[in-house]
Amino acid sequence: MLDVGLKVLDLINQRGYVAYLVGGYVRDYILGIKSNDIDICTNATPKDLLEIFEGAKIPREDYGAVTIIYKDIRFEITTFRREFKYSNNRKPCEIEYISSLDLDILRRDFTINTICMDKDKNIIDLLDGRKDIDDKIIRTVGDSNRKFSDDALRILRAVRFATKLNFKLDEEVVLAIKNNKHLLKNISYERKKEELDKIFTNSNNKAGIKLLCELKLYDVLEIPDIVNLDYTDSLIGIWAMIDKGVYHFSNNEKELIEDIRDALSFDNLEPKNLYDKGLYVNSVAAGIKGISNTLVTKAYNELVIHSRRDIVVSASDIAKALNKKEGAYLKDIFIDLENAILYKRVENERDELLKYCIDKYG
Image 1 (cartoon, rainbow, N blue to C red):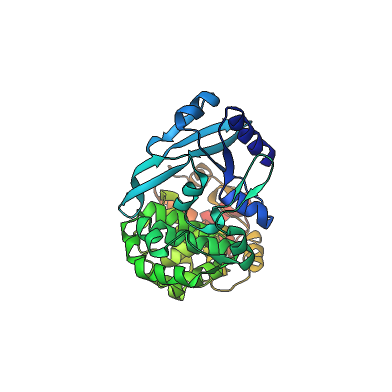
Image 2 (image 1 turned 60 degrees about the vertical axis):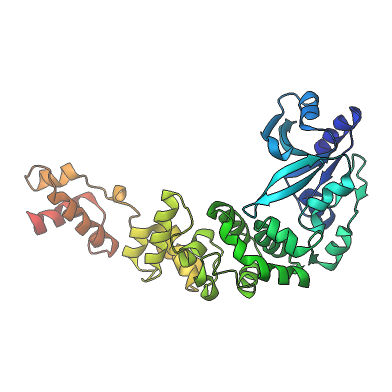
């Protein structure tokens, strides 16, 4: 992937412009972390880039960004720029294209994300970002209060980078977060959830959750229950414990959240509960309660049936055995059969089940 990115730089250079890999990819390259997201900055304007790359698109023209697909890899290329007058503590209202990399990197969030690489793999580090990587510190580019008031989402990005990289927040960053955290109310729930999801799904999420609590971000994020969160490595399990109905979830996610909340209140090794809620929901709930996933999986695998489809008699079989027409009464019979089979009061064998139905309902 790096070789393809360097080739993109070369193509831009061949047209007389300068271009660099910038941001997270270069940071992760230095840290030896695999990354699949490459951003490029250049003094070429979006119009210039459209002439260089066939099929290039401008998804956000006001931001000077162009998206290209080269060798089946997606790249976002931004023109060197300055930004002015942020609205709603999130987006710049005005930008100005410039020719200087030195000025362009001043608009970026954290020093560790300002390091660049040219087509020959030379590292350009104008703001000592590499030193901050060595010191394992998250430091803003310029005044922290200004950075967070311009774009309040950077507060959560700071926590995310500290979580992902196991870095510490600079003292000025900590103070600025505390001073500006109320501005997170102006950020959409969608964007906040995107950052929180990345924190919660990281292998170091315990540290990230602890940092959210230490910075007292839970109230403004409307997740007060995170303070007493029982640890789980399940993203949907975390949301089941902390969401108060303010964040958006798909219908499937909403159903899982409700099922996990229900499953927290009952025995996750009990056959009927395993049957009704399934392996995933019970595993998440059990994990939150400190019950081994191995035990839950073993109990689930030992179930005689896992769904109604596993019952070896059909509605028509039962109706015929009872000499009745099919009807709503069969629903209750199947519920009875599920319990009888799960608790091994009757074998899941056709003749046995039909005899059971005749004896009880005939």
